[in-house]
Length: 445
Image (cartoon, rainbow, N blue to C red; front, side, top):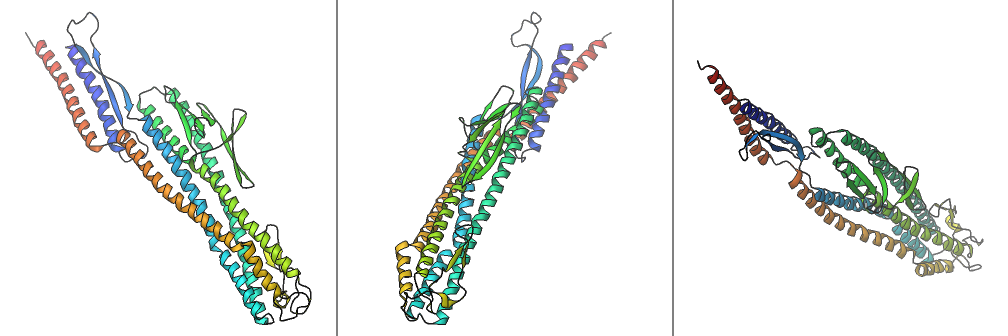
């Protein structure tokens, strides 16, 4: 009877634990990052020499809690997330460039400036038309200045985003070290180990959204992480984490990883940091093109102005002044009469210098250069949006594949719940029968 009682008791304990795990699955069916658990049940074999009957046993034993994980599906999700994050981050900065180039109507105001010059050329002695050209010059200078300031704001926002991303990445590295330490102290295949492993995977998912990572795991579930892929920089080595520093100089972003006394340069190929690196290069290139146009435009217009004669017969003066950056442009003239429309000695009705200005417009192609910059950026933005849509679909597919393996299916859990309840009831019934049988024996007189 003692063996029968032991068998029943082992079943009660095992299936009670199984019911608890199944209940936990059901309760966390909608929780982000939760991975389905199952119990590993093992038959307790009879002791050697006690029973000589094949397949005889002494009950059931729960030997552990198993997470329904899929290493390859998890890696596919992290890889897809890194690719998508890089593209979406790049789209953000391309969109900012487009708004900067078009929001201040720089190209339209330059066209307006040359249009006012052509109108004045038809009647160079008109005070109203001269004032109109001066106003157009002021409007163009404001547009250049505002465009430069918009680029400054992009740089500031990009630096803030880069520092925030590296700060978050460093915090995740420290948290992963703590989880590695916890996994090293926790008995494997327990509820506590499963919970720590869930937290570990969530941290790795968050890391992959910031930068592409390469992960290796030991038998206890502790992870080592490299940033930038398998050949990248070591960042987490079980109980030691590194630190990533962000720096931008001359349009180039530099990411340095310091760990255990050494420093290496991170070259991300995925994640938001890779998008920031790409964005910094594109912002710098767009700014350089605008500044080149601004510098050449001011130099040529001022030279043409100085080579002419104004409405009063005086030598022409520079029309524009430039501040700290080529786009910091202001009008130096205070009156429309100071516009040098004529060649020296040409008189008030001469518009030779305005004709030369129109020639410079065609030869230098300033408007065409600005339009080409806007068009190229818009084309790249459209392509990246298309790529982002495709990568989003790929990530959704990877997530679906992972969820089918690791997620909780309430229908399946309901079946498991019924099965374990019946097994629990059967084990309880075995105990009851053993007790009744023993009592019957004791009652024999």
